Length: 203
Image 1 (cartoon, rainbow, N blue to C red):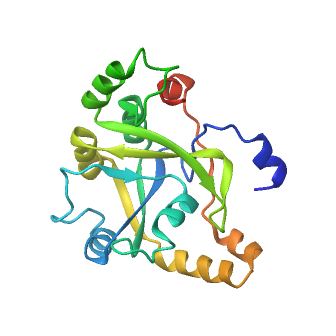
Image 2: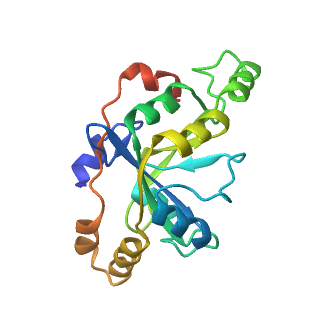
């Protein structure tokens, strides 16, 4: 992404690898879960459905979060392709993970909404190849309860282990070969979603 594009990128916009019917999100797990999921295309029985699971459309934000797959219990990086229908269902049923005066009448109202929402959203600074923060935000989508169950049982189209790709890009970054590293990044572009789907999620 050029410097000019960075300067003109909207603060709140979803960028993702997507097709007409699917969108790719990223997660990182310990190998016992991650490799089994990639092998079968479904999360194994020991994947905890009762915990909130966070998915990230941004590959580089996932790399920032998992340290290129080097952090404990995050050694296996997964690219999870899910239906756009499911992804947008989660957005429509999500609440911001923090109180925003412009969107909520008061903190009590936000807490009530948070308690009844099966999904939540937070916007964190996007990252570059060296994990420096950029001036625009990256979407993180948390799924719990009904949303987590739908994610695991209905939305997943395929799961790919992209740990080798993460390692290859990381090695190039460490070697100072940022152009070659950038060329290997998954192609992420603005995700087309109606304004009303995100209106309640832009702080």
